Picture 1: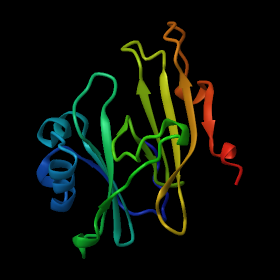
Picture 2 (picture 1 turned 60 degrees about the horizontal axis):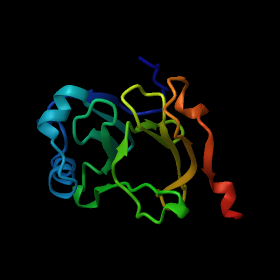
Picture 3 (picture 1 turned 45 degrees about the vertical axis):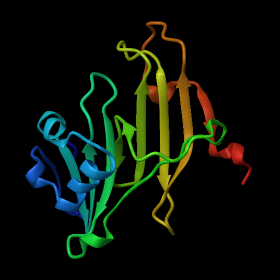
Length: 172
C-alpha cells in the first residue's frame, strides 16, 4: 500500500453499496445504469478526502479486462453540490465527453486521471488516455491519448504505446 502524505486526508476502500454516500449511489444507479451491488464487492470503491471534499472512484459494471469506473465529487455537508466528472475524447473522434473510463486510475497528489481500454483479452493492445484537472474550473482536460492498435502479443505498459494525440496539437 502506498504511503500517505501527512497533509492529505483520509483515503480508503469500501466494498458495499451501503458504504457509498447516497448521492454517489444515485449517480451510479440512475444516471449511469451501474451494477453497484455486483461491482463493489468485486472491485471496491476508493475514496480520497481533502478538507470538506471527497473524491470517489467507483466501478460501474463488471468485466474481464475493461472495468468502467466513474469519478464523483461528494460534499458531505451539502450533497446537493455533488457531481460526477466527465472526461474529453480526442477532438477528431467527434464524440461527446464521457463519465465512464475503463480501468480508471486517479492520482490524488496530482489530480491526474488515466484510463486504459484493452482491445484484446491478452492486454497487448488498446488505448490509454491521460487527463489533468484544470485548477480554475476543476474540470478535466484530455492531455494525451496513446493507442496500440496491433494486437501482436508484444506486451508493454500502456504508457509506452504510440502517441495518437496530444494537447500540444491544439496549438494553444
